[in-house]
Image 1 (cartoon, rainbow, N blue to C red):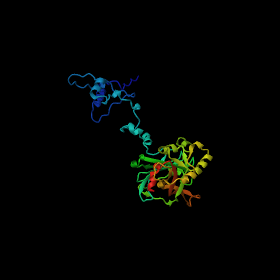
Image 2: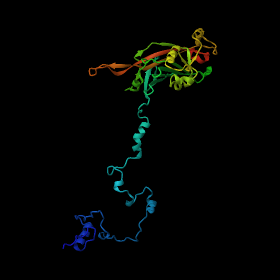
Image 3: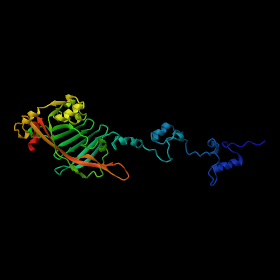
Image 4: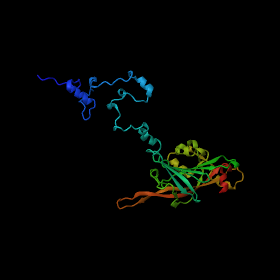
Length: 360
């Protein structure tokens, strides 16, 4: 009958046991004794007791360790999570901070790039007809199918242009600095609303794709279009303006009492289903003909015909198409820029509302 093999976890006796203790004691060149298959450590009998140095200390509790090292101090080995509960990753690489993990979520909120459907903005430097340089802002909203342009002239005048392709409406707004010594308010606002023809400016989806390689370049229009003279003989009711275009209430908020349009444009919009309550009658054209120009009137309290001129110094008016051997049909390859001037004549109940016409 064969004798049973000694257990790896039990103490050995005799010379074999002494050799095992010598190997475990750190004899150079000797391998460690085998461990248990279950991963159990050697029992206390295999470890030589250390000599006592002074009085023995009782093991510290977790509260005592926290009092010494603080809450951020080293945790005892038994308090550390087992390997299978630790975060995944390469050994020795610290985990990424929470701020870095949230960075991909914060970038869209910080405006690094506009999301789908958000208005795209383009800022360009343009040369005005008098030779001065100003900055112009163009925005395109493909979802609302609209384009807006804003230009601040060196004298402080702010000119805005809005094209609403869905309603066939274009809106001009001007904010002119008032002359306080003449009894004017801080600024005067005017709005002119006319019919939009789709060949006047490029579509909103094309405007949203425009980019520029050199933001510091000064743009000058390639084509100068003729002056358009418009006689504005109808007023627009601001409270009902949203029925004509949803952009009118935001664009013309400062000019609630000075919104003008033309009778021929009103007939077109009425045929499109716009309610008649949007428009208000002014003095008849025959009566307006008898009124003098405001520049010829000396009394600031008398009615007259006011004149205002503005210019869109630079705007994308047409798409360019190119031909290639690789493509059977022509394709869009750029834009053509235009400059256009407008002249508006309209009725005012008193010359006080048209003092800028004195300098024209």
